[in-house]
Image (cartoon, rainbow, N blue to C red; front, side, top):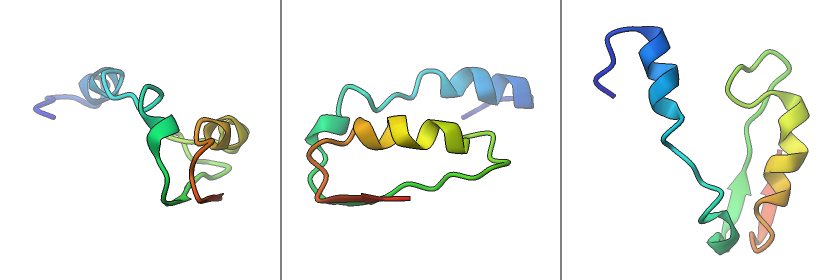
Amino acid sequence: MGAATAAEVFKGWRAYRTDDVSHRVTQDVLLPAGAADHYVPLHMLGDQMLTLPTARSAAP
């Protein structure tokens, strides 16, 4: 990412989005999440699954 600090990495991640293409996914999807995961905490897992309406399967 070309970032010099951890803060710059987090700032850079804001540019990466999937909500505009998630509805096009038609394959099986594995969604990693965890109680102590700062990328995808468990409380976001349900919302993430809802963004994949055409996935063949979406498993946590």
